Amino acid sequence: MNPHKRRQIFARFRAANPEPKTELVFRTPFELLVAVVLSAQATDKSVNLATGKLFKEFDTPQAISKLGVTKLEAFIRTIGLYRTKAKNVVALSEILLKEHGGEVPQTRAQLENLPGVGRKTANVVLNVAFGEPTMAVDTHIFRVANRTGVAPGKDPLEVELKLLKFVPAEFMQHAHHWLILHGRYTCVARTPKCPECPIQELCDYRGKTKSWASRRAD
Image (cartoon, rainbow, N blue to C red):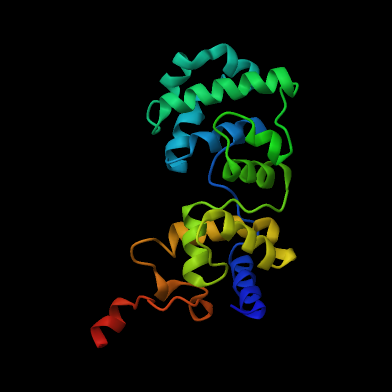
């Protein structure tokens, strides 16, 4: 894909949604960190339902550490892999208290040293909480980047590095949100909604779907 077409794609995303936001509900970097850790293999909606109750009382590393694994499990039982996630959230809370003064660190290396935090989670926290121009490649972004031709790659890291290289600087801050939302609601996995896609003619995907009316005419 040439740079001009890529710029047009992100310009359209920006025009449609100038200030995209994460669908996870949070108030502080710590709440965001916990929510992103809990969101692995789970929907944002299910995470928000659990953290809506949890964060009313337990919204700091100190509070989560005192709460403990067993009681935390009760709050997040509806989320997949809740037992492992409860252990990770309590453990990372204790590390934040011991090594970072209770604050969420602002470097990828320090974030990735926390239990349950991988590269994608670290990138989300850096971008959303601290305004870093990072690219958190999840399944939606991986699919959209490959399907559209914006940044094709064989694995999430390759896609991430290509996006960091190819996305124009003016769009980088919000690029990963635009791509996630596009993959979540338009460029969906099974049957992409090409007829209503704002970048349809700019996309390189050869298997574009047709509208119901077009299929009937054929």
